[in-house]
Length: 102
Image (cartoon, rainbow, N blue to C red):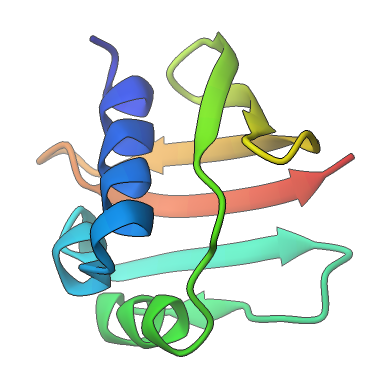
């Protein structure tokens, strides 16, 4: 399983369980998360990322459509699609995540 596929599996588990702190632990302490043309974020640091997920938790799981480990296309369970761009820290945690929606 690729790092991105593992990340998506952990995201989907958090959607189901509501354990966003566990999911946020996949991010580097100084990670960033941003969204393109969406009026939220950017978020800087694992604590801010965890807080964002707890305060506004996604309700849909996602399925990978394409995955090259640094850029992935996905589909929401409700039907929309988007792209994730990931940069990985040397320890395998997510250093930066940028999400755009179609």
